[in-house]
Image (tube, rainbow, N blue to C red):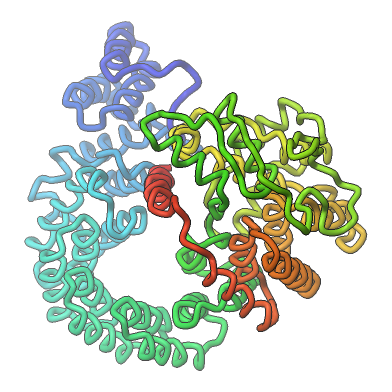
Length: 610
């Protein structure tokens, strides 16, 4: 379906005014167009239905032809046809079209009209067909539906109640009605209907619906019992095993959960639900990223899974580098955050014991114009020098002052990055896929973006970042620029590629946030391409060992972040994992930790509304 036409949007009242004019002039086709537009914007408006009835009377037996169903039918046309079908004595066909509209736009109240909620309708319809309709609606909405979206489904719940009253012994109908009630928050009603359905017609599906209803009601023992009976009905339905395992794990019974998932995998080691659940639970048990990498491999190798799973994203959500940029550490950004949080009072000068990453200094001085930065001393090893010889110089130092060594990127490149960069992603392969939009950028632009990050977007997300932690936006831009490097000249074999060479030089360049961004890009490459994992793991191990050695002589602000990156690396050796754990454990609590936690909560809320 489509949402509209090419003309500027009209209100429902304007659409109806034009429909009436067209109707009076006998132009039924244009009248139908405008009635459809009105129904799309106000599907329960009585005046829209009155005008539709006048149009149908004028068209006579040809009324349905005014609202044809094409390959890309306008949703208002579909809804208008549904109402005409009901008026013509074909309400079941009309309900099917309303359910299709709900699947297209679940937050609109397409069914909230008198003929749908009339008690006599349910008595006239085949209960099997009503059950299928309710299942179609359930499949189109989340479980549970957010409160703001429940009112749009209330008419279907009324239809379900009427149908249950008219067909009180129909097990499939009772179960489907329970599923809808559960989704819209009517949990007690869901339990009642599902219980009646199982008593009327015991079945695997009925027990599953009952188990879900009990689980939503917090009655876990009864939920597990119902799901267990579902397994007895059909021991080969491994999705139920996964549901039992998930329920057990959610209630702190991880060992029992893994036993159930192992039973499922013993029957079919490739069953998608069981594989996803198994890797998620094993990661939950020991935190080893190898489980998530194996799950990502499974997803890549099985693109035709039975349905979409969120286990990988659930495990990566909120975890450093697996699902989000790690906030920067160091004195410079701590001072910046505190300055911005102090009622708009900006710091005029800051004295540092040693040099901070150039990106940190540049971010702070850009956010606080006129900020004076004094450095007490430059400790060895000199942080102004790359850790290994490099031809890729991003920064130029004059004493302790730093400036970009590269020209600014093109405006088009900056705009492209601004549209894509985000501080969070579902998981590393998803970040890689999203960055394909940067594939056409020139190498000079990608490198220029690292030292000349564009301004944050003028969105709610961008405003939060700028107001509370500009460093996070700069790190976003650098991370996505390096992800863009992964897509640069992908026709070149990895071993001799420009993208590999440049990323490695950045990893071993001047100690900076760009080091983290480049290393994350390499780690992401290892997630999506098993062939590069040994090399990337070796690079991560060497870089972390170098950081640990330097940390013995002077502070390394990027050390903790690199340690988190190491723990996100596929095929990393145990010794490096242990070193990463030590660096994280030894890291002092950041002064701004509480403020950062509040910032991430705000950002998470913004992501949830996207």
